[in-house]
Structure formats: C-alpha cells, structure tokens
Image 1 (spheres, rainbow, N blue to C red):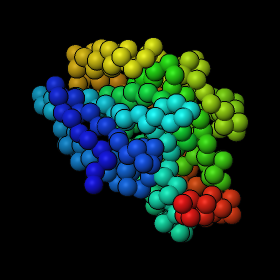
Image 2: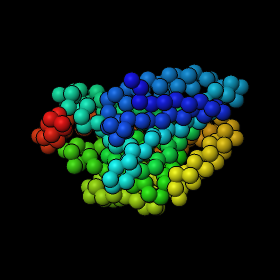
Image 3: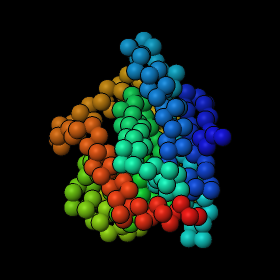
Image 4: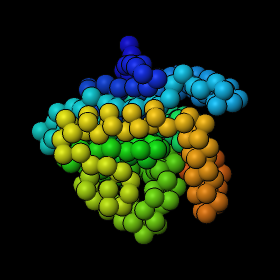
Amino acid sequence: MTYISRQYSDEILTLTISRPERLNAIGPTVAQELWDILRPLWDELSNIKNPQKQPPSTRALIIRANPIAKPGGLVWLSGGDLKESTTLKTPAEGKSYVVMVSSICELLENLPIPVIMACDGAVIGGAIEFYLAADLRLATAHSTFAFKQLDIGLATGFGGARRLVKMVGKASAQHFLYTRQNISAAEAQKFSFVNQVAKDSDDLEKQLQQISQQMLATDAAAFAVQKKMLNLAVDNAFGAPHRHAEAELFAQLWQAPAHKNVLEKFSSK
C-alpha cells in the first residue's frame, strides 16, 4: 500500500502524503516511500552536467499532505510514527530510521531545484524538521507548529536543531524546543521559518500557484547555482557539522527509559 501520491504537471512534481490513521506521521514506512521517490530524482538531477544545455525535466518539487480533521483542528503532518517505532527495539535500529529521514531532509536541502512545502494545519515534532528542509515554506493562517520531541523522551534527530538555529538563532531555538508551545503561523513567519502565510486553504492554493509559476520562469542553471551559494554561505557562517551528528546523539535516547515508556503505551494500543 502506498501513502504518497505523485502528480507531474508542467515540469512540477507534486508529492502528497496521506495516511490519516497515523496522522500523516513520517515513520519508517512513509520515510522509505519518500526515499524511494526522492533518491532517483536526486540521481537524475545530479547527472545533468550542464543545465543550460540540458534543462531538468523536473523544474520544481512541491510536497503536501492531506490534512486530517481532529477535535482540536486540522493536522497536516505529525512527527515520528510512535506505533511503528515500537518495532525498533535497539538504538541502532532507531539510528537507522532517523538517519534515513535526516538523509531525506539533506537531499531536499541540496536538490538543484526549488523545493516548496505548503502546510494546512498542525505540524508536530519531527514533521517541523522535515518542513524546515524546504526552500520555500507556505502555511495557512490557522496552521500551528509544536516541537514535541522532549515530550516523548527524544530530541531533534532529522537535522532540525541545526536548521532551526540557522533560521531563528540559538535563543529562539531554545525557547521553541524547550517550552514545546504551539507556535502560530504568524509567529513562525516573524521568525522566518514560514515564508508566506495564506488566509485559508483557497488562498494557499493561489499562493502556491503563483510561486510555482515564478519558479518555472526562473532559469534552471541560475537557480541551482544560487541555491548552492546560499547553502555554502550559511555553512561557512555556522561551520559545517558532522553529517549525521544529530542522528548519533538521537540514537542514545532510543529505548532509554523515558522514550521506552512512551513506546510501551503505544505498543498496547
């Protein structure tokens, strides 16, 4: 069974995640599906030696999810799938999973095309780390963001700490990660980890269409170079960490008492 649909139109690839029974969680199953789609795309785009002479067939990537209605409002993406996580019994298995998602985020960050995410609803835990890997991040006004990793005895593992500090600074990152408060779309835009806020889902569609067309009108080679320059500028400013530094630290928490207690509750459901 697949949980990610693919739509290709006008040189734009749109991926839509839909797994309502798991609140669209980015657990091992969805992560593997994402990897199986995105890795070939990376290989294809990386093999284009001269985009001026050979423009890529995929010019932009949009990642979406079908929002799930809950009593408290819509959920766009939740973080790790706790039910699936109960099958990962050792720190090594936990690390293998988190390295896969971290690698997906790294791939999105380095694809030579624009990566756009458009959220409509709550974005929870590790899903925010996934969202931060996009180049352009849209949200509806009622969308919210909450880092819940510490609530389940874990920490960021998908490279989210590094990206968040780069975007908002260490002090604000500490506030968001430690307090786990809901962050409104307006506040997220103020701190620049949301680029644009739409009034509602209809307005989100309009904004997404406008940005997509603007990206298609941009020279592919120029965009690829500009994106690489920006990544280099940030890495040089902050210092490039070991590739999976967060994943290695994350693995120390997998099946530690606090996280194990959470998993045991879900394994009985």
